[in-house]
Length: 256
Image 1 (spheres, one colour):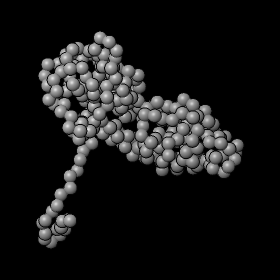
Image 2 (cartoon, helix red, strand yellow):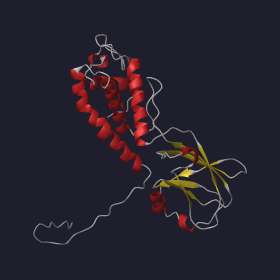
Image 3 (cartoon, rainbow, N blue to C red):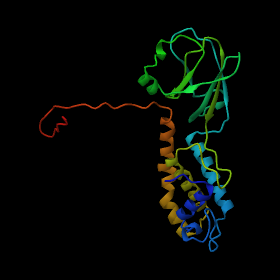
Image 4 (cartoon, rainbow, N blue to C red):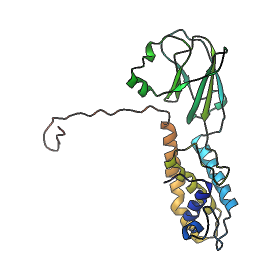
């Protein structure tokens, strides 16, 4: 689905709970509440969005942070230095879901921003990081919840790590969720619809809708987010084609 700002997300939520938003009938703008169905109000739906995001952060193990300073000792061996991202200082027990920027502070001169790479990109380019001796770090990459610095630091310094560890709610109608891929954001909006419907205990129609969409949030949606979080820092893998020349009953030759 397309990327939605908070106003557009309210339209999505209203459709989920059975209310036609004015934008659909040409009688209002994105996010407006219909005159004939003012409840839930925009303020209430904004709160439902906040509550949905809180639940996502709790269930998936996200938390919010700004920057992390991590001391790294001088190294003497060849190859990159590895830094586990689990339980890293102020990150506590939460798992970093997004490394946005890394910089190296060697204590002398300016802080140096590190180039972001993947191990696959370096393998393709022939970058011999396994054979490099310690020097001033130039690059970093993340693989299997571990951050690697290359070259390894010859002198002790501090890694300044700017990481995403939570989903932040939009703060205005023009704001977006920036911490989740576009294809996963409908989970948050649907969760907001669920949060509203859970308050409508005396409305049989609302309860029927709740029974239909709650599993899409609590089971399917949160499971998909957990799978994404567990894989976001893992490397891309290649699949190599092959030719099979086996023949026999039930066997298909895929010789080209």
